[in-house]
View 1 (cartoon, one colour):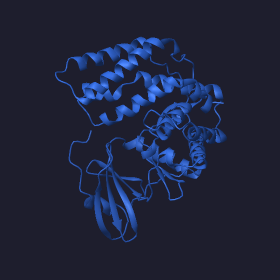
View 2 (cartoon, one colour):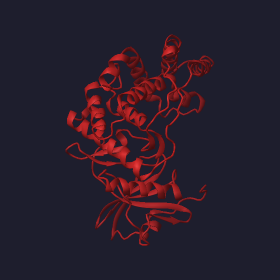
View 3 (cartoon, rainbow, N blue to C red):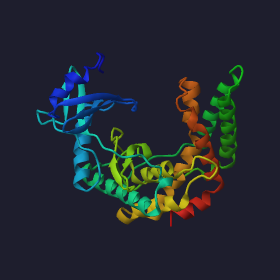
View 4 (cartoon, rainbow, N blue to C red):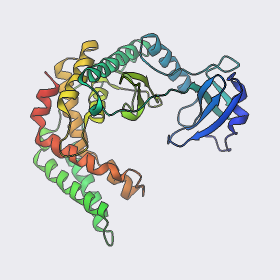
Length: 335
């Protein structure tokens, strides 16, 4: 673990031939790494200090990115240093430089059906390429779902924490309402827990695919898939369905834009068809996972971290809508 303070960008940037530097500005976003925008006579770049993924794991990530680029997946490759390396170690800290891309993050709700299908095709290409470029022996993949009894115990533990608090905030009320709703659902729907069936198609995944990690150009075509630090092994179908929920959920009682989500999944199947059965299982598992999971509430009460409190209303609305429309969702997205 690095304990010393990181060197200043001015100390690090000479390891790259970027030309005369006009300005260096800290990028405020990004929890796991630290970045700066660098303006030079030759263009704009991003200097990145890697804190979460380093060394051999980072080198593996870059090998995967090159394979994806060769397969036509839009990714951002590192600028070689003066030594021809992807990264440079300076005073025990690992840095890299990347081209700065202009673009925007887009919700799937803002995309046309055609662009939704294009996005799905790109994810299918990513998974196919990852299966070939980073093979894994973990086939089939076993990932049991949470038993209803365990989920109920976690809900009760959180309810006890809320009851033990003096006074009450809006979040306390919202959290208690959500937990009591989920408790009733888990009690009434315990028999609908997904069966522990082996997943037949698994491999390396992006690991964190959502709108903030995809950059779109002015024509709403994907310009780059960003942030591969969560590259991990898992079921392809799970990442497909999880990303569907991120891109196409309204964040209120309307649930998911099913026509756009269906185009996204159809585009994926144009390239990499996992079969209706495996996709239906993944959809069923994601619904159950969302019903059992209370990570925002756990962060608030158990970690004393309220940074994600604002996400709770959206998550609660999606679970409620999905539970009430379970069969319709399945019919629309898995044919």
